[in-house]
Length: 129
Image 1 (cartoon, rainbow, N blue to C red):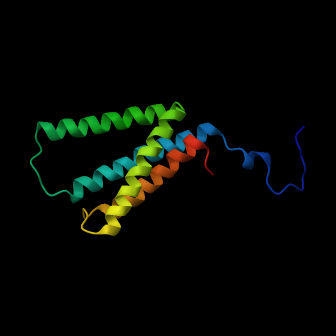
Image 2 (image 1 turned 120 degrees about the vertical axis):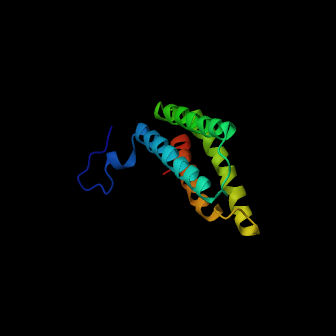
Image 3 (image 1 turned 60 degrees about the vertical axis):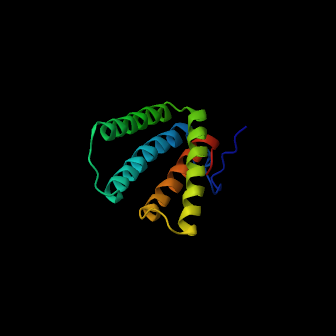
């Protein structure tokens, strides 16, 4: 039986959040933060000749980004967990590289993107607050 008290501090709607909302937030966050990551990488990488290989790599990146975002919107929990583990490892390695010194000059900008993406994916994958 539900406790429906007017004196309750936290209502039932605040206690249980819709899981599809978490997956949508994870999908939008994953897409947006990876696009920011891509823009930062292109901005900080020294000028290079954009040939067929570079264009195919960018196309593959955007295609995988779209596929993963689509499946996050489909509420694939295992995908969210798998990506969260990958982004957690990337965050740890990037933080270690940052504090060890002699890193790529964009690392201070990449690190927040990685941490936020890790959190959003972990939220969807393991129901974090």
